[in-house]
Structures are given as structure tokens and as C-alpha cells.
Image (tube, rainbow over all chains, first blue to last red; front, side, top):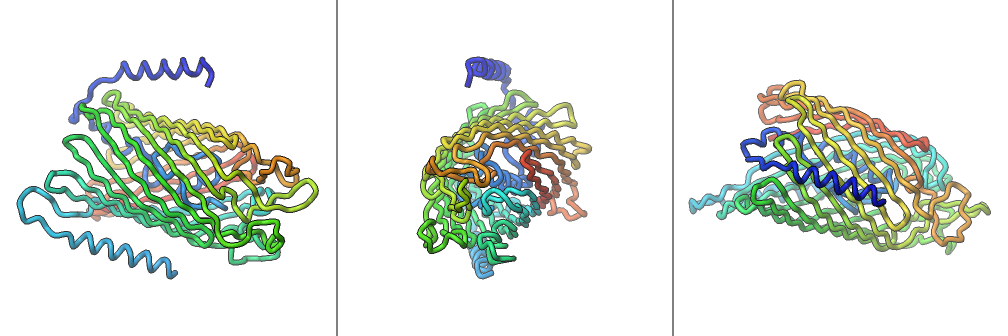
Amino acid sequence: MTPQKIIIATGILAILATSCKPVKEYQKSKLNDSEMSLSNRKVEKTELSFQAYREGASGANAGKSGGGCGCN
Amino acid sequence: MKRFFLTAFGIACLLKSFSQQPSDSTGFGSRKLKIDEINLVSSYYGQNGNNAAVTGGIGTQKLTDIANVFDIKLVKYDRKLRKHVFDLEVGIDHYTSASSDRVDLKANTSASYADTRIYPALTWSMENEQKGRTISAGVSSSTEFDYQSLGANIGFAKKTKDRNGEFSARLQAYFDQVRLIAPEELRNTGLAKDNGTDNRTTIAASLSWSQVINKNLQLSFLADLVQQQGFLSLPFYRVYFTDGSVHQEKLPDSRFKIPLGFRANYFLGDHFIIRTYYRFYKDDWGISSHTVNLEVPVKITSFFSISPFYRFYSQSAVNYFAPYAQHTGTSGYYTSNYDLSKFNSNFLGAGIRLTPPKGVLGVQRFNMIELRYGHYTKNIAMNANIISMNIRLK
């Protein structure tokens, strides 16, 4: 990672960190919408499988990180 | 078929044992185990291409896969009001592969043309809602004709005091066994591993931090450290050298991967959600890759949404890749598997989601239906289509 990229990433994180506002449970109606979930949706499950088979990279998506074959 | 019935019998026994949990008669507030939701995900996947690894990087990659995943989630509160969730998932895939058919070059619709994979998984988690703390554990398996995988995982998650942030850690282990089926012409020649089985072990540590930024925005950071050890090639992948000789794919017996991910989801106005995902990946075989995903669910009404999505992926090649008949074998490792070559891919599609308050088709328990279609293309002349459906009962 180049120094420029590190500076940009640090800057973005700093902006996000300072823009955090405490949100009460009763204010989370939009955040609790099922399509706002920070995980993959069930319907994406088989898509993630074929991508893991057809591509060299996998992981960092809160899913399975190994096992199975992927030999086709 | 035998495996299918054994799996079905196992599920039936498990569900029966859950339903026979003794009811609480003490009045301390524990609640009986009950079904929270049932999901069925079905999909059809079809692909075409002309760089099959079985035939050394040339030849048809035509493949179809029909997948069905059944998932039941059961919830129970114990006397200390801790929430226990049991998630039982059983998946069954049936695929046909024109390239696998060519393990025996003379064959036409041989035994390796089609196979069925069965993959059950059971996960338990216990959440202390007052303390914002969750622990979990799970086991899984995956079985097909030439491959057996057993997995186990444990996890821990802790929310911040204001419930706006959460840290989680998970450790996964997979113990796989590969049946050594060599290309037909290499069997009994002493040039290939073609007898018995070999092992592959994967250990993965996953860390994540999720944070609510404001009423409309939340994000998460994900990092995995993955170490694989053992037989990481596939025994029936051919590699042709410049001198015309044929060999079995040979890859190092160790691989270390670091994927780093970032998600940010933003609710824009009352009708748009912007879901974004970025992943950087690097491993010690020489692949580095970038993945960018954007999905914008549009809420036409509170109960109906349309979600167009686009995903871009790029990767560099592993150090051991060369196309058909271009390997010299001097490096000691070699593959002509184009999934490990340098390429870009695009994945574009849309989904629709229906969650009517009175249930789909007026059936109250039929809580949700989601349909999704995607078209996938690589810039190395390979393409695929996938259509998926998720039905949820509550």
C-alpha cells in the first residue's frame, strides 16, 4: 500500500469516526430494515459459492473460508 | 440417494429432539424452543467457456448446477433470559460438468459427468442481550463423490455499551479429504498421484467491527487470516508442457490468504438503500485482487423492492499459471486453471423482494419471497447466468 493510499484511508476513517452520532434504539428503524443488514442476504448464498469457485480470491464476507471442492 | 435419505433422517431426528425439550414449569421465564424462521434458497447456475482446467486450459467449461438450501432457525430463552439460536442448514447441489467428463478423454458422459454434493451445517449461538455478548459454535460437512470436508467453528461477539458498535471474532477449521482421481492416461504410470486420498486443512480467523455512524449509515470492517495446508492441487487437472507431455496439476502444499473487506450501507431518503462492499485480497501464491460491489434496493412500497446490483472483480495470476502447452516445468509447480489466471469479471443483475403484511399469496406464514438474476462475464471468454429464489416462512 502506498503512503498516499494510507493517508486517504486514514482520512476517511477519521471523518467517519468524528461523524459518529449516538443512535438510540428507537431511532434505528431505518438501520434495522432487513435490506440494511451488514451481512450477505440468504438469496446471495449460491452466488457467493460460484464466485469462490470461479475466482482466486475469497473471504472477508462473513461467510465460509474453506471446505468444499470448487473443482469444476 | 442413500446419502440423501441418511441426511433427511438425521434432520428428522434432530427436529424431534428439539421439539421434545421439556417445557419450563418453574416460572423463571425460560421459554420453549420454537421455530423462528425457515428459509429455502433454490438456484440454477449455468456457465460456458473454453478454458477447462481438466483438459489443460482448453476445451469446454459448460456446467450446470441446481442448488437447494434448506435452513431452519429455532430460538429459545433460558432461565437467565439468554437467547439461544439453533440454525440447521442442509444444502444439496446437483451439477453436470462437460469438463469433468473429460477426466477420461475417451469418455462421453462418463461417471464424472455429474455429481451430487450434500452439505449440512448446525450452528448454535447464545446471546446475553443485557450484556450485549454472544458466543457461538458450529459444525459442518460437505460430501461429494471425490471430496469430503468436515468443518467446525467457534465465535464471540461483543456490543459496545451504547449498542452502536460490535466486535466479533470467529475461528474456523476445515478438514478435507481429496480422492486422488488422476486423468485417465496418467493412471498407473508413476507420473501422477492416483491412489487413495490426500488431505487438505484450512484454518481461518475472522475479525470484524461494525459501527452505526448515524440514523442512516452503518458500516463494517472485516479481516480474515486463512492458512491452508496439504494437497491444494486437484488430481484430475491436466497441464501440458511445451514438449507436448501431459502432467497432473502441481501446486504448493501451503497457501496463506489475507482478505480485507469493508461494507457501508446508507438509507437515502425513504425509498433508496445504497449497499456497498469493497474487498482487497492477497495471498502468497501471487494473487492480489480487488472486488467492488454496489447494490441499490429501491423500495417501491414498504413491502416491495427492486434491487439492481453490479459487481466488479479483478485479480492477478498465481505465479504458477501458464496457458495450454506453455509450461516448461522448471519452476516445479504448474497449473493451467484459468480461475487462477489474470482476469477481470463483471456481475450484473437485479432482484425483487416481496414481503406483504398478510403474507405472500395471502398465506400469513409465507413471509417473504425474493427472486434474483445475475449475468456474469470474465474478460477471458467465460460467462455464466444464475437465477436464485429465497422463500421465507415465519
